[in-house]
Image (cartoon, rainbow, N blue to C red; front, side, top):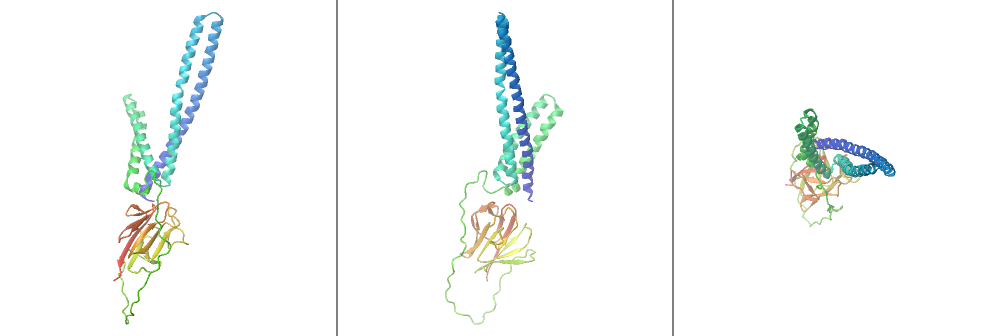
Amino acid sequence: MQGGKGWGIASSIYNWISGVGDVGLGVVGIIMLGAFQSAIQSLITGVNLMGGIGSAMGDPTASAAAGAASSGLEVVGAMAYLPVLILIMLILGGIGRCVMGYGLLVDHNWARIGAIVFHFLSMAGALFLVIGLVRLEFYPWATIPLMFLIGNIVLAVGLFLPGTAAVYAGGGAFPPLRQTQIAPVFAPAPTFSPIPAPSAPPPPTYASPRQAGVARTEVAGPSGPGVIAWLIERNSSRPGREHRLGEQITIGRDPGRCEVVFEDSKISSEHARIRFENDRYILFDLASRNHTYVNNQEIQRHALKDGDQIRLGPNVQLVFMEAKRP
């Protein structure tokens, strides 16, 4: 697991706990306010009854006092609706935290940005409580919001780190619908001009690939016409393995449709395709769920160069290497 994902998991756990706590606190508060409103209504009914009895007995003072008390209780009851609105907002905020916690677990960038915003809001609230408790000289109690303040600062900084942003990269806060250019399945048939047969030519020699501690090289498709090229796995379950490129290869999770297969849940069944055209290799993203990147930039179509760093989803990393035929 990449280090950046650890910050996302930590923030997800924090948001889940805080969200569930906010929802529970809001529900309990609304229940208590409902009981308070019922008590207020009972008091108003009792006071009105006493005022009616006083009026019937010819006591205007008792009737006036009962009327004033009833009006005051009605004002108190009406003011209780403001805390209800605050508690409803607290419940909605808790639900939002839970949704963001799920989004962080499944690598959505909008969840990372939303979590950063919530962490900053939590920092502001914790700082306000710390200052208020210190001014009241409740120093032991001030340590509780102080710990929340420090925790939110650490999590917000962790979500800002480049490694975390790279894990959650791929579309921004609200990714638009993408128009993906997909390579055709079959390459156009090449045309050949007649070439006089040479007399006993020596066997051709080819430039060897760079050495990367490779124990095995796999040929993916037929040989390319003018360039020798390889993909080298970096951080998969087979680091260092080479895949020789031909006219066209497909990379993905489905062994029935792909020449280069990775058993990774973040990889699509047909994730990307590399095709040789116009004397160079072109990388196409096949509308994959977690996108394709070259040198940390999301691509739809990219002409590969020697040494390019390819990433499929958040986990699989490859290096493209090529050498011209002599």
